[in-house]
Image 1 (cartoon, rainbow, N blue to C red):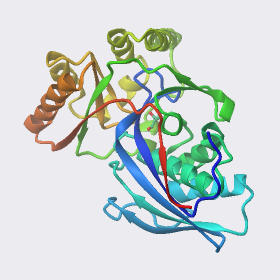
Image 2 (image 1 turned 90 degrees about the horizontal axis):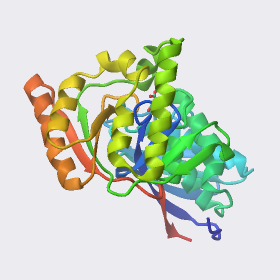
Image 3 (image 1 turned 135 degrees about the horizontal axis):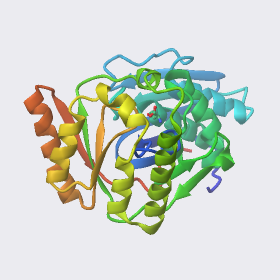
Image 4 (image 1 turned 120 degrees about the vertical axis):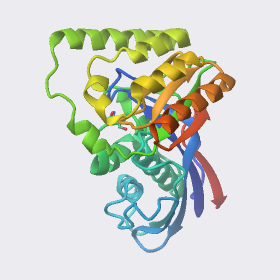
Length: 319
Ligand code: HSE
């Protein structure tokens, strides 16, 4: 990462992410080209972090800097840089829906962390921002890095711990397109984590390990059909959460009939993510998924996207 002189103001585009990729609960995540949050940050002489405005959240996110993931991450990066005599003013434009399983809290945390680093000379590498982003995420949705790590690094990331050297960027297969459908039901991550079993039978553990092994192997060989097959082999998390995801079975079936290779819960849901090989197929799949919810009387938003190779992107506004 190049080191610039300090910037006065910057803008960061921080991507949505699909966490878990099926069986890789808390250890695998994928960054998406769209949707994304935009974090505008300005360096000021007064110490501390201020949230100037949040747009696009319907007034739902906390404005208190101690409670918002963006400002928590920003404050931790300031601390990491040992900056005490200056501060940062943040403006947050939410492009990600809240509580939808697309990593909304992570995107804002990552956007703010990348922005603060850039305002003070960009001396930290992306992976060095991981602990601050994980702490910020933990304050609202539990300690897991499978949204923040791909949002920081881009592509598909394997997480083996919360330190900078514990995250591994895997190769992103070519021809990977995603159809996403977000039904209009709220599933807070904390609730979706509360329903998970505390202990799992050995047989399920063996099944889950084989799925993750197969998935990582398929990712490395760029075999998208095998990747999608491995993603659907979840013996632990989906069975415990499926009752929170209306229409999962029907949507999966409709997606498969229109060309999807597999469908999983995105992160903690309720967004469902179908794996396709072209955006044209993904568009058809997204329509079919939406129709299933329409029949059920549930309104839903669909998106077609591709992986984000680089994760959060930075634009210097003023030096
Ligand atoms: N791995 C986390 C979970 C992701 O499934 O609870 C939350 O976005």
